[in-house]
Length: 97
Image 1 (cartoon, helix red, strand yellow):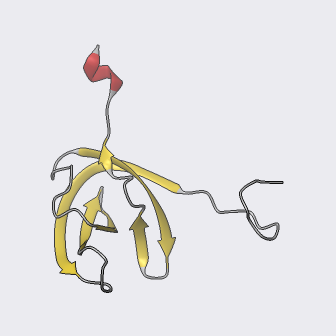
Image 2 (cartoon, helix red, strand yellow; image 1 turned 135 degrees about the vertical axis):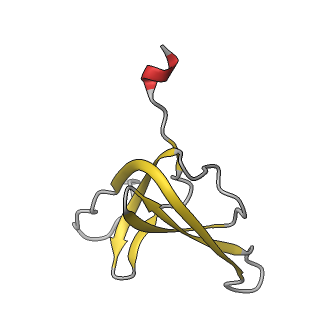
Image 3 (cartoon, helix red, strand yellow; image 1 turned 30 degrees about the vertical axis):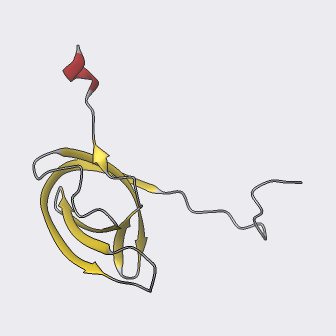
């Protein structure tokens, strides 16, 4: 019985996935959450007209405005939050033929 160590019989909501063109990106920070934690940067990104928030330790993102991106996110009361380390360039297989 060494499984996922979940309590109860609740179903986890699946992660949502989005892809599209990165239209704009703004960075806030660095923020110091608590002592001993690395600085966090908060990015506000717009992908195909939808606004998302992304929080990471990296001062630069691996994507640029105009890139096709793909990522996982979840919807909360505070907005749409991109999962950590899920933001990246979308690769189109047709480009490599």
